[in-house]
Length: 478
Image 1 (cartoon, helix red, strand yellow):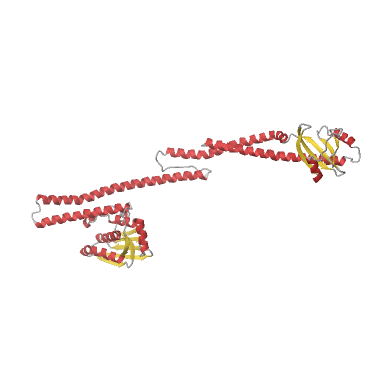
Image 2: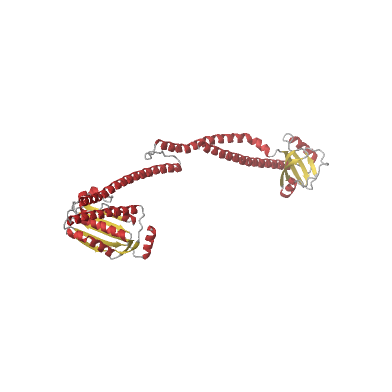
């Protein structure tokens, strides 16, 4: 890459220097040409002032011819009708052709000063001509000099041009080398640093360089390594969660299956000697089968919620009716332990899935009953804030230790395993609550103190009785 950058840089540099040299040559040549024209004009004006137009033209031009011999210039005196009156190079002017149509003569007659450059067939070389109209009489005084054109100035400029070009090219080449290294060195360092990691993408360290774009690459690489680390850690954590889930699920399923198998074997062995014992065994088998069914249903619901595969049938739900139904289903269990349930609010409608809302209310309220003390109380409050439904379930039961608050929403996690199994349940209730809340983009918080009780607060953005809102929710989750 460095070589490619250097090559391109030198190519552009060479082109720029060549163009700059050409422009300098043209500009300098133009300046020198203008100076030559000014010098010729000055010479003509000097001769014009010294010339006696009343005297002998031939004698004066003879003396003028001797004066300009070393300069190589040629003076010609032309009458305004084009007839040549005298010439420093030609003694007999009678044979010279009329000069009226010459470009420099016409320009001098019209503007006072004329200039032309053309090839002379007589002399076989390129000539420069300058002419002025005399202020002393009806004459045009012309000066001609041999010129090699632009080549003349090129030969004068070549040494200076080559020197300046060489110095500029050398200095620029050195700077180009430094510039290319300043670009490629940070990239090489980034590559080397990444090569040292050997699969560990968490300890990148890049030095700052003068170019912000390369710093962005380094920062992006570091950020990507951190994201990769976080992603791998999340995958590892999810892997552990899945392993724990399958282990717990198999254990939870194995328990009722073992119980069912045991009672079936007792029935087969004839241990049920009368109808009452048989009914007791069948009742226990039915209870374990229902427990296993509930466990499978809860596992399937969590799986669907996690994969976003749950098909939510969004319908208007009267919160007061839903709350009443849930409380009635738990009233018998609460009454058997002398637990009072207080309910408040709910006089509004939400747009949600009936089964999911039932699961949400049932799990929170049933936990408040299960993990309460004999003669305890449960306070349930449901209200609306703008388009949010808020559900608060508070009890004065056993409470949750502080070190368990962060884990209570994990699948199969139980704070008191003995009490949990005695009260029944699958150990998935709060995990289902968390996934339902997440499904609707809501939040759930918990506050608890051991021996004082626990409060769960759920906020869901579903409190909207507008039918169009139901249609939108149904379309999003279809």
